[in-house]
Amino acid sequence: MEKFTTLTGVAAPMPLVNIDTDMIIPKQFLKTIQRSGLGRNLFDEMRFDDDGNEIPDFVLNQPAYRNANILVAGDNFGCGSSREHAPWALADFGIRVVISTSFADIFYNNCFKNGMLPIVLPREQVDLLMEDASKGANARISVDLESQTVTSSDGQEFRFQIDPFKKHCLLNGLDDIGLTLEKVSSIDTFEAQAAQARPWV
Image 1 (cartoon, rainbow, N blue to C red):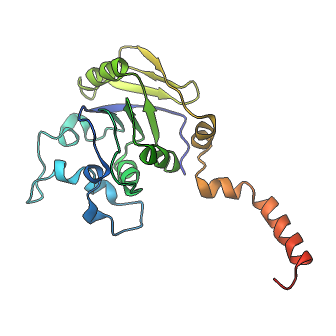
Image 2 (cartoon, one colour):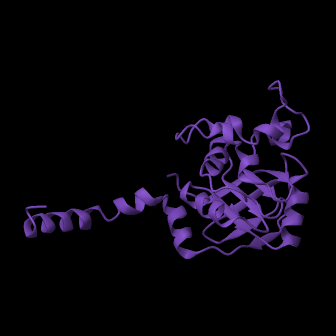
Image 3 (cartoon, one colour):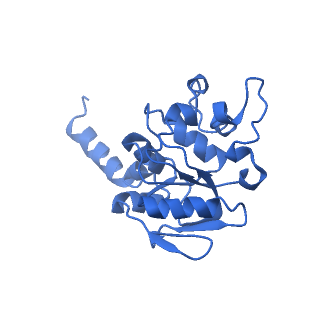
C-alpha cells in the first residue's frame, strides 16, 4: 500500500449529504475483485447519462476538477452498504483524501485499509474548505498527516484527530497484509516450534 505523508492538490466540492456507497460505485460494477479500473465508474450515475455521455454539470467532469485528489463532501459520506469497492473506486480515480463532518463507520475504516485518509472536521471548517474548493484548480488544499493539519489555499490551518494506530499504518503504507508481514519472523519461529512439538499435525 502506498504511504501517505503529505498531499497538496485540487479539492473538488461535493456538498451533497448522505452520499452512499451505491452512488460512489453502483452495484453493477461490483463483479470484479480487482482494485484497479473502477475509477472510470466512480459516481457513474451522476457523471454519465443513459447513453454514456458525460454530464457537464457534475463536478468531476468540469475541467478544473478532473484531476482532483481531495473531496470536500457533505455530512455522512460513505453511508449505505459496506462495499469495499467504494474506496477502491475513489482511490483508482486518484482521490487520496475525503473531508467531511462525518462518515459511515465501515467506509471510514475501509479508507485506511486502502491508503486513503478520511478527515472529520467541524461543520464551519468543512464549509470554509468547501468554499475554498469552489474557487477551482488554482485553490489547492494541503494535508499533512504527521502534523494532522489541513491548510486552505489562503493559509487557514485546521487540525484533525486520527487514531494513532491508523495514522501509523498510513504513514508506513501498512494494510492488513503489510501488518502481518511485519511479524513474519515471529510467525516462522512459531510454526517451526509447533511443527517440532506436534509433528503429527
